[in-house]
Structure formats: C-alpha cells, structure tokens
Image (cartoon, rainbow, N blue to C red):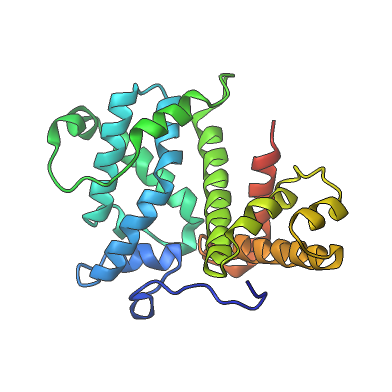
Length: 247
C-alpha cells in the first residue's frame, strides 16, 4: 500500500453527489435512482445506532426491529427527505430527528409491525440484538447510546476502509498486525514486531506513521460527509472523540 493511494470510487459516483447530506437531498428526487441505491447502502451502515435508540427507549426487540425497517422503508420511499436541510445541522441529528418524528406518530407506530409491504433492507437484526445485549446496563439515555453507537459506526467504517486499502495492496496480514497501534493496544517492542513481520525497525515505523496518517484522513473524510459546513469538521471530530472516551 502506498501513502498516496486513492480510494476506490463506487460505480456511478460521478453521476450524483456522495456526501451524506447531498446524498439525502438527491435521493428525494425519484429520477436519481443511483442516489437512492447509495442511500440504501448508507441505511445499512447506520441502522444500528437508531435501533439501539429504540431499544433503550423501551421498545421490545421485535417492535424495535419493525419500527427500524418501516422507518427506513419510508426514508427510501422519499418520506422525510423533503425535511433534509444541510443548513439546519449534522446528518446524524437529521436522521435521529426523523426517527423521533416517525415514532411520535401513534398511528404509524401501532401499524408498523402489520404492514410488511415493500422491500426489506438486509439488516442483521439478530446480530444487532446481540450487540445491544452487550451494551452497558447502567441507566443511559437513548440519546447517549445513539451518540456512542454512531461514533463507533464511524470508527468501524474507517477501519473497514483501512482494511480494504491493505487488502487491495496485498498486505491484509500487515493491517491485522499494525491496527493495534491505532487502538492503543500494542505492547510489543518495535524491534520484536519488525522481526516477526520480516522488516527493519525503520520500515515498521514508517508503515505505522503512514497507517496513522491514512486513519486520520479517512476519519476526517467520514466526518466531512456528515456536516454541511467544513468549518464544523473540527468541532464534530472533538465531539465524537469525547463520545468515544466518555465513561
């Protein structure tokens, strides 16, 4: 993997905007089928924080699953997208506010589990419920659990993209050895790890430096896609870092 390597561009990305905000706005146009498909992928990536919000809000697992599916079916059908306004805040705030609006409608909430119409998103609810059961059991508000899971979802996406970088470069095994330096888990001396990876200690330090730089760049890209104003990137980075370290 080289430091200057560019990320793979998804098919069709040149034909429509790819930031979270512009994607939502474009998906509200029925003529933008590519944007709608990309929005479906986005929903698959970020459904769990909303599911966790519902579960912590008191909804049983089966009802939370039904509500999550129905909410995203409506989003993909164009509902709530007319409310999307990048000038009014961050994407994560918009998607949570839209969910709150949805569940506040008593009639929709009562009928959501009976509908069953429309295409189902391939959301892994069984693994999602297992993840939720491992959430801290202390009295944490739905908003705080949503914020933490959102931050972790961003982190997971960044790590997945880093892994893809190494995989495309034919060095996936190096990523598994080096990622501990991003997570603050490594206790092995550089010399020992360099010997195990059959490289010099200097080459190992360069590899770690490049990995950390790529990690920072990808994290910034993820955050940039979720805010309307580039000036908000730094504050959002600090916010999510605080969420991830919050006890």
